[in-house]
Length: 344
Ligand code: KG4
Ligand code: ZN
Image (cartoon, rainbow, N blue to C red; front, side):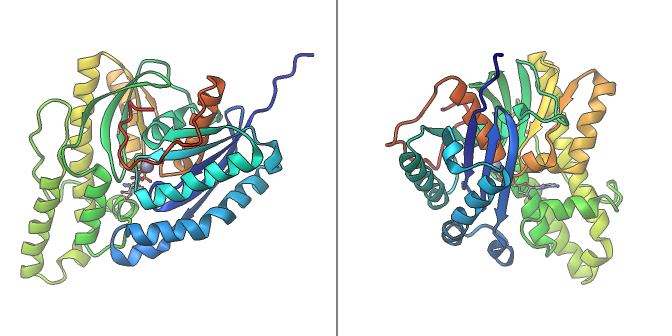
């Protein structure tokens, strides 16, 4: 009998403020452990120095837990995949150094992964609750550091069609939340309060941007001035209107994203549309994208929640796809803070 061999890959993610490790077997996730760093909450954003220290503390227990939950021994692993970039250098170095040491100790190959490709290729994790998109497809990658349209022609053939020229959409969420006095990361909280509010209660100006590029810094300033003006007149303005403010901010952001998404589909003629990245966890974005199926005849691909925000499952799937192509990295591979989605 020709039985398929089980290939076990360990994925390690440490690009920003989440330390994560996952074990994947032939494309199926066996474990995906994420340690969030609470330390940044009180600073209103990620403090790079504190992030790398927390990665140092978390990395060993997180990897041990991932291997244990997968019910394997580390000797069963066939390769180690790790995030090479983009991200915070001090954070990336922790995962990179650990991955290199483990690959040397176990004498198995090392696979460097581009974090942005990880967000996109998380759609190829073998999971009955997720449908895999066919090539070519469009992906709107929306996270704390990026907002971009990517045309994916093959696993490692990606082209950026447009992106933000200033803040990422996750930053727009987090900075708006900070103005409202909400803790970091504020995106999920704005989403939560927005569900209870009136999206048309307040109006914010949308930016005018050519082509498929985005801009979110003007919106942030507009929200700041709006809040300052209203709090001056009524010191309780935020608490009395929190749900409506969040709903109105979210409505504006979703309109900005979907105005461009419609344009991207029209220009490329590609109607297979995916979303990826932390902000793709947003309830309204997921709902509006799903509605385009009956409204415009698109086929949409929405990742499972656990594969939206930073996690090592998405790094492990890229590791597996590269393993199948014998696409391994040398021990001298280095971490890099800047890396385009089209780069290896
Ligand atoms: O992909 P990710 O974990 O990290 C980066 O690679 O940047 O994305 C984190 C971002 C944060 O800005 C966070 O506020 C946002 O994703 N986010 C959300 C939601 N969940 C996470 N934004 C809006 N609505 C959500 N439900
Ligand atoms: Zn990310």
